[in-house]
Image 1 (cartoon, rainbow, N blue to C red):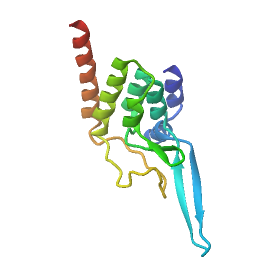
Image 2 (image 1 turned 90 degrees about the horizontal axis):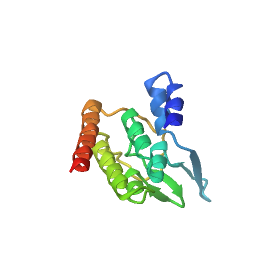
Image 3 (image 1 turned 120 degrees about the vertical axis):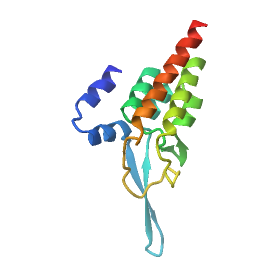
Image 4 (image 1 turned 90 degrees about the vertical axis):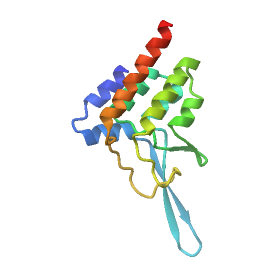
Length: 155
């Protein structure tokens, strides 16, 4: 958590923070044809959010979501296999309770991010990052999850 906070503290603008939070290793595939036609594809690896989910680190997942990590972004990590925040949450390395909490957090946040028309992980343009229009509502819903969890623990 401290490492994530220190990395983001270095960024001075919202755009740079979003680029850091949602950034991923990127590579290009060029499809050459005998006719001379070429087509380029941009492939993206896991974002910091997807890595935190995969490792089951609940407090980092929450922090990244609160800072503007986009759970709708997909990653192509190997041989055209794609993953996203929902898929990673299903198989993350966390306890059953933490896994459910991560799934709930992702579901809350996904409602506030527009789904991309092209849901494949191949992109021909740069990814553009933006905060949800109703960020305040999303944060309130995330806080509501905390209250629900505390009530369950008290029972």
